[in-house]
Image 1 (cartoon, rainbow, N blue to C red):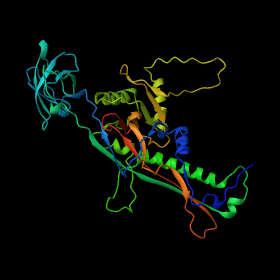
Image 2 (image 1 turned 90 degrees about the horizontal axis):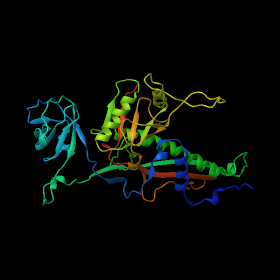
Image 3 (image 1 turned 180 degrees about the vertical axis):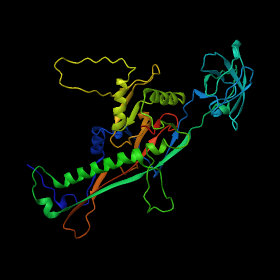
Image 4 (image 1 turned 90 degrees about the vertical axis):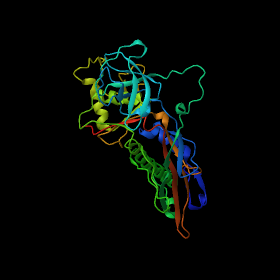
Length: 380
């Protein structure tokens, strides 16, 4: 028999909805289904240690001749004195770094290390770290100790309210066993979609001197648009496997291992069309009795051997011109301590009915935003 909930049944009652919210997270085909729930934050400014991912490559910022003893690179901070490096071109040469000028990003190098032959190398040639050999009896080297940086994000409050009159709560409605619980469920779903939008689009902001101004978390697009993030402008071009592979390679060079491609419907269709490229040799096996046509793909294998196969997640909330490559293991949805999703009575005095409010306070934790993830934007 259906149970009717009256206003006094839930008066002064707070119900934990975190488990119900987790069920919704896992069932909906959005980015939230991939993001684990992290340990509660203890402050609205949630901080975490950002462990260093060792970069393995950079690029020449200008060609060098076989007699040059210095080379300018894009980012000299990736290297240390004593490093052995090589160049990713047809000429096999090893060099040893003897000095670094971080202002001009110039490496002073010993050419033809270990008997290799010095050669000319073109602009933009990849400079790859080979090793960091140490002498016998070494002591602690402060320059080789990597201190993790501190990153932060702000928590954002999500709230929905439902007002149900006493009369409405008592009337039996076809298909609705419990009007109050249905209203709470509807509000929870609304907050879910609001949270999806925040995780993708929201910008990190807080007016720390005025608590009446709502705080907003930084979402994926905000983090991956920051200076230092790995991003590539497609220039309005249609998606190709080369564009995807180049971005994956750039993340790999920074030490990352993305496992997920996040995109909207338009780019999901573009990825599926990669199998129909003129250069592809497609083999499809179908049953003779099949009445289904068309195709789609759910994973992308990069050209890098032994690299993770990226799962393709199609989220209707993603912008049409962007694709995000993310490492889902480095993302977490973090509730503020004691503020995971819940509903509570907020009925004003004298109201002939019940008002229930659903509220939660969350933020997005993204580790290694500049090394483990990337964005391809301005796609046609």
